[in-house]
Image (cartoon, rainbow, N blue to C red; front, side):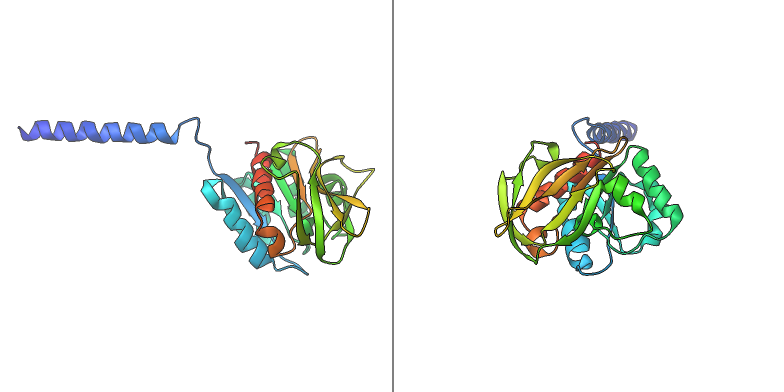
Length: 243
């Protein structure tokens, strides 16, 4: 066979391979990985172990998300333009005014925000807009670490595949909605075995523009490593991203 013919066949095979590869990459059934920035750091929690390691691993499974973790709030501002979901788990201050405004602008642009455990606290007296508008309330106390039950109260993409109820050891946050703040929609509640008090545990904040999910669970291994928590977290990021 002539050398020119062989070259032509090789070129055609290469072209077909490229077309096939592009078609697979552009297949409507294949979703792009969600770009997540996870912010941790602060007091009373092992952020590196349970957020940087465990939650990052949970979100990366199956290619659901690409996740960058930072415990330096000064890096948030520059990264917002390149992400789909901001995941705040920190209780250390975000003191920079430009970063605070940029977080609001990020959500106002229709992007996703996931607020975990420490980030649902009333952490910053000098930034009341955070709790009032983005969290829809907050917590100022919690039960002593121990067992309690979480009950799903509403079907929603965030609770899809989660058992109707499950038990775990954690800090049961006394989360209270702010009557003057953004309304929340409770998806799951938490109740201690020794008390009749019931508190929101998983909820969405009905912010008019972006998608916000609150997850009150998450102190240590007994939440981060169990399947219900991991399913909720993955669902929350996926829903917040608009997928």
